[in-house]
Length: 301
Image (cartoon, rainbow, N blue to C red; front, side):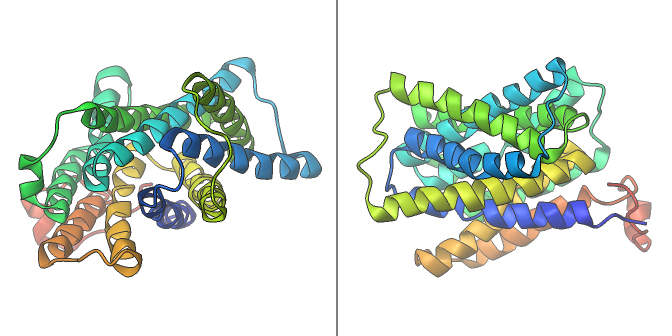
């Protein structure tokens, strides 16, 4: 019988992170300092809870180092993505960052024992085609191969490595302890980066502070507690590809709150993207024979 909890957690996490590009578009704080406060505020909320409830468990040294590495990788991802989205367009940065499923598959195939299933590659191809339709094929002809482009691609690579390393770490560490350690590592790492780059730690408007708090609570704590739980129980390739679904939700939110238009191409692209994600959850390897028969129950996570 299918355990629906990881999938529900993943869906909830995707919903929470889908508002992040909308908040970044507001440009109320610099990208790097925004990444720092996202981690630091989330850590300051989670730590008291862990201490009062005594749920924190210090893992073995090798697993502790993995969690710290995850914190550095995730902080790097968020920091360079924030800068990329502020120095270019949100569309370009989001698209290039969302190439992470491709990097996850390649890294898994080349360096790890985990070999992505055929359905993953089929689903990735379909989903990326849907993503292309979502942002518009004309967009690819207007890509600027500048620093923002490089940072956005780098963000996707950091993100993919994070997902793979966190999968290994979460087999030995509970989700809350893992989040506590990784958030502390992220906060320290980004604080040092902000000091080196002479970023301002104060002087923001009330709305700026509210957005920083919202990012920490919704986009970090709520989203990544849910996604980490899903990662613990699901294949990292499936998690990474499923996270592409945030592009569809972000487009809807941008339409609702930023008056951005939704075209027919975007709707079709979004549907194709979601079909690509669904393919990776199909239990049997796709073939013409399978497609002609009734879909069997999906029993694999």
